[in-house]
Length: 144
Image (tube, rainbow, N blue to C red; front, side):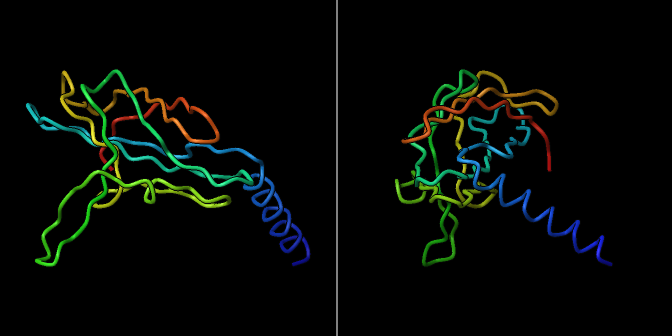
């Protein structure tokens, strides 16, 4: 039992140290495949801010899309789901927290990709942050 407790304490310390490592990093990214002739695709990111400074996404770019926008999905008063450009407040990543993009919420919108995303391929992205600079991300296309 003491061994188990020691192991759990050690694991918690490792997790705490990695969280407070001073690094802002993309810990997960993915994009679902697209149907043929679809005009847009989506990309989802999870960004952990292990630094001591609040940060914010200022841009996401990729050569794989004609244009890239950051969108937030909201449900209006008639319970209709609508997308809008994400405001700066939704792109903030406070120190020690995680920003998770997911279906039906915040996401990267890929407009006019020359070909649909196909399962098994990867998409190279550059995520620009206000304080941490740029993060290069290779995103797999997979249907989760």
